[in-house]
Amino acid sequence: MKITLNKTTHEVQPGATLADAIALLQPQAPYAVAVNMQFVPNTRYAQTPLQPDDDIEVIFPVTGG
Image 1: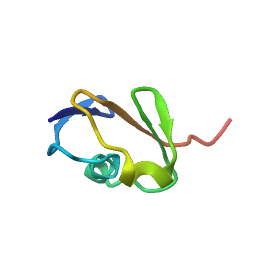
Image 2: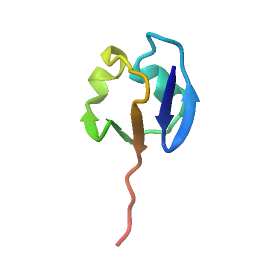
Image 3: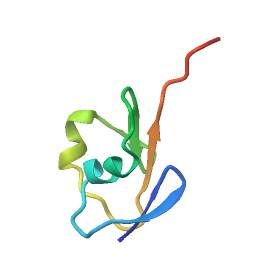
Image 4: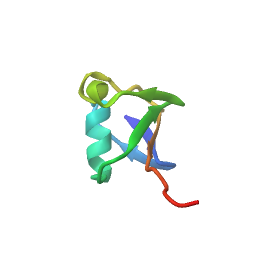
């Protein structure tokens, strides 16, 4: 199944969860995640099923001023 993860197309297995997609990036905390422009709390990553063509953004905070 095709998804977009940080503007890059990836193939994941049917039944994959948001946690599976995030694992492809192996991000260092802290970060936030949105699926189709909707924020998903980190407590829901493993319970959030992915759908074909989902657009996932892993967002990192930026410091400075």
